[in-house]
Amino acid sequence: MIFYPEERTALFIDGANLYATARALDMEIDYKSLRAHFSQQGRLIRAFYYTAILEDQEYSPLRPLIDWLDYNGFTLVTKPVKEFTDEHGRRKIKGNMDIEIAVDMLNISEALDHVILFSGDGDFRRLLEAVQRRGVRATVVSSNSTQPSMIADELRRQADQFVDLEDLRGIIGRKGGGPRRADAPAPFDAGFEEQLESA
Picture 1: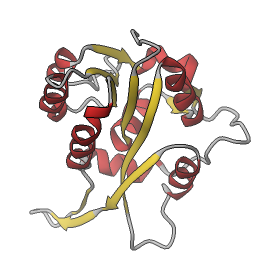
Picture 2 (picture 1 turned 180 degrees about the vertical axis):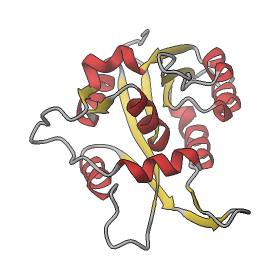
Picture 3 (picture 1 turned 90 degrees about the horizontal axis):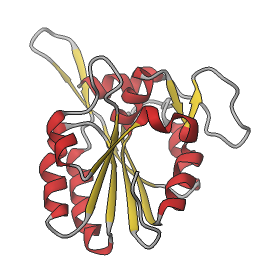
Picture 4 (picture 1 turned 180 degrees about the horizontal axis):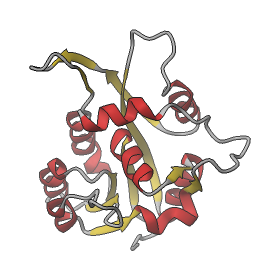
């Protein structure tokens, strides 16, 4: 990874996409280490985390993680999940955060030198192109080590640099099911993020 100490940076974490990528790698993200690592690479201005949540449930499996992130230096961007029934009568949920990520990245790009996007979604290619035209460098963190690849080819080509999440395992990852540090966020039910990713 190429970072410059004086660069103003921001993280844009597509929660569902990062979760799916980490799961495909059998990796659990240590968000405290993630934020600390990228804070050391430059001047971290913001660390955004995006996820949709089920509001009608008494307890959301994402709540412990969301609360931990909110109290530990991340800017949380959430919205309610939309539920619908498909043509086969199956209940589906949709919680796409692409617009929120795009609006925030464009709005803050004038105050940044470098954006780091945690997503492999090819829909972000034009967004990266737009911020690059403003003189902002763009790094994408996803994975090409999975089968199938979690990074869209067009997004990888657009980025100034691509970082495989697998290469960050020793820095920001904990082995799934391994011991957790006392200050780490509690694990949460995987099912909801999986449903969001597939919607």
